[in-house]
Length: 372
Ligand SMILES: Cc1cc2nc3c(=O)[nH]c(=O)nc-3n(C[C@H](O)[C@H](O)[C@H](O)COP(=O)(O)OP(=O)(O)OC[C@H]3O[C@@H](n4cnc5c(N)ncnc54)[C@H](O)[C@@H]3O)c2cc1C
Image (cartoon, rainbow, N blue to C red; front, side, top):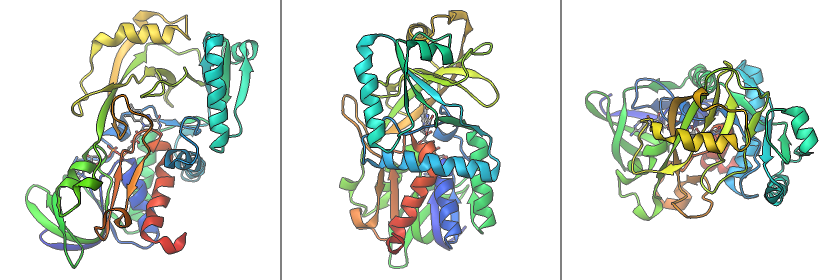
């Protein structure tokens, strides 16, 4: 691609880049998606729980709360329209002792203030009636939580993008760039290096987003946050899990707690844990089995250690530093950083999958504020 000109470039073909690219193409942009890997969704987007979150956990008024609640609605509608495999199976958040009831009530209150008004408080008898194998002194039932087949979702987004005239180019790594009078000039390595000038660039590179911003000469460094990689392991469960809903403990400070999910193929798994690390590293550390066993057994006493098999690792791109409080999604626009035509998406960790279609709407509005 020597010195080509493009209208809109989206960097990164994870679920966020694809959702944004689709939305912009449908709004009339000529969109080119550049992806460094040889296929879509090889990073965070294929290494997660696949849960459609209801929006319980995030501070009311935050972008995470807003995009999760709106994104859930958009995602269910989209999956139905485009026949993307999903299930609205519901979820239980369990308290294992009365000491945890206040925290569980706090979660219910927080969810209500974020617009989630369908949660149901279950006493022990009702919780056990729904899920006989869990240990719970009380639970919250979230009927609008579910599971989506993330790969099918990404394929549907890509098909929509292409139907709207957009294009995906794989094996193309954005190495850097600069702001020019004609637009943003990107240096792209697709086997050999070339440049590409685009009027609008959406940086949806996940873990790579901050690095790309640093490599755009003249981009103000004070507008580039630190992205902290936080690893999460999953153990697969050999044999069928006895749950018909997702089962979560109360959330921790960094993650939502080691929970149980069953994917659409029927595979049950537990995870993820949460550990800050220096770099994105997908190697599985098998020494965690005991920690997993203890954590899960506290609410699923029937678990046998031999049923836990090493699964996979996903890495969250977090803006929340170790020991720090909540950090929101960051959509950084020219109004924030002053570089015309560039929108950076930083820190799109959970609930990014659930929020993908809503984040795409936010990006569209940031480019065309007149539509607000
Ligand atoms: C363990 C875990 C569990 C999670 N569970 C859930 C869940 O249950 N529900 C939920 O809603 N969310 C969940 N999430 C969050 C969700 O997975 C992410 O928010 C979402 O996948 C982020 O998508 P993305 O497109 O921003 O990032 P990615 O999927 O990482 O995509 C970024 C893309 O950019 C590409 N790229 C990077 N640098 C360059 C470059 N220089 N040039 C070109 N391309 C580049 C990468 O190759 C990659 O394909 C979870 C995340 C983790 C880690």
